[in-house]
Length: 345
Image 1 (cartoon, rainbow, N blue to C red):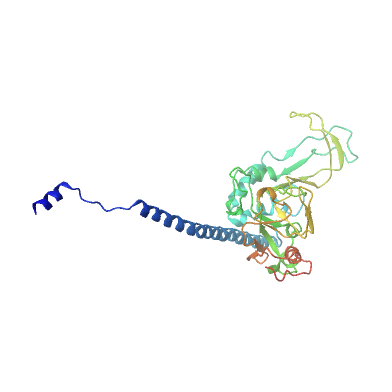
Image 2: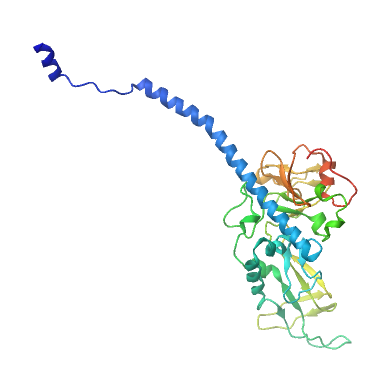
């Protein structure tokens, strides 16, 4: 009895704990669980991002229909909202995205861009003689450059950006991840003119904001593109020196226009395109998550492996299968060719 009491007084109490082998087993189990959970988390995040991108397209579709209700036609791909090619007071000029801003609760942004007009309309004095038979013009040239007005507003409108677009960076200037169907918007069609069916015709599709590949002119990533309207008579003028220097000589035509920037952020039905390396790609549809250096500007880009999300003319959002045929894709892009896309959606 005495010995046991002495032993209890001299020996320290044994503490419970893990052995090295037990710790290694626990770490291995945790690593396996993380390996199983990470793909699931990534899929959930991608699904959430796809839903957000689809919601952006849905809102753009509602805005396009509201614009149509007011103007009885869709906005132009790039141009003036008054239907002319001339700069006029209180008119908007820009891409279809820009024209939709008032219907996306962004009238304040439009007002800010229109405010940039002050001092931006260039009026030069008449040129020196000899004058044309009709006499001296009242001014040399009137330029209404809405590209300056729109693009001088330093904002990035997040609704025009997809969370899945890998090319979006903080320094981009008014980018968009949603490309307009130029076969529709260049013609400013009313919805009734889309005879192939509103549910069969694409208005917008996802695509990389920055895409400079292909032999065609690189499309602009900016939705703030604009055009200029020139109001003057046809005549070559050699400019005299002005306070800001000699400009040079140009030939201006009445109502002439020029687009500032590259090809607008859009796509159209094409039979083929040529890559920067000279390779001809026949029967194109769209690319599926290409590397940024392999992006082809003439076609849209699917931002996820499931397919490219598109906004149809009826306002619905649909994912187009990567296996869609060229004929079906072309039918979905052309608004009045008498063809219907059919299977492959």
